[in-house]
Amino acid sequence: MIRLLLALYPATWRRRYGEELAQLVDDSGLDFAATLDIVRAGLTERRRGLTQSLTGGTGMLVGPAYRHPGRLAVLALVVLAPTLVFVVGSLLAYQLGVQALVGPMESANALLNGQRFLDLVLVVSPAIALLLAIVPLVRLDLRSSEIGREAVVGLRLRAANVAVGLVALAIGGILLWHIVFESVMELGS
Amino acid sequence: MEQQNPNDPQLLLMISLAGGPKHGHAMLLDVQRFASVRLGPGTLYGALSRLEEAGEVEALPVDGRRRPYRLTDLGRQTLTRRLASLQRAVETGLARVQP
Image (cartoon, rainbow over the protein chains, first blue to last red):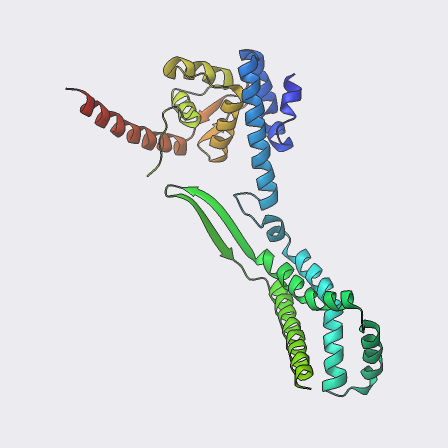
């Protein structure tokens, strides 16, 4: 029975205290009240363990991202890549006059023409990339202190994430400016 | 101000361990004797794990199948502070109810 009840606890807690709790139950007996108490405590530990695994411990709400900033920066770059290629290619072809890129960009534009989903992906990806790059830089702790519960926000700088975030911001800005400019021109004509 | 609950399991366990190292069952019996509070096994180990996490108690080598715990210096300081706070409340209360 106690083995079944111990299954309610997170594995790490069970490994550390499981044997001792089982021994205590052996010593003190397992009546209905004790069973309920173990179930309640097990669920509390499970909830606590889940919170910690989600938050990296100590109540950090963005923990998984905080623990893997490099991976998130790479993921942000992957998400941003199509828009980055498209925007940089367009700038080089149409603004700087790189003739070699005009053909491929015309093909790309023809492909995108009327494909609203692809359009949407290109427009939204800088925002998603920015979020993916920046979230690992933010640490949010919920603490219980003498004055009650408090939320503490911390920021850190990691070159790769900041660089990808700035690129995403720049690409998103250029794209937004282009969309607004095109809309104004269309309205004007 | 730190909130004090005289029946807080962590406080009761620290008081128990202030009398010397004990394993789980010994703590349970001791708390029942001095506070008339019967801690459930889950409550006891939940409180104990938090105290250990906070560095206020530490585990000693296993004795048979039981692992004793003892109060650390930090735990002793915390307990002293919490008891002093409770004592102020008790003394104030007694002074007010006694004629």
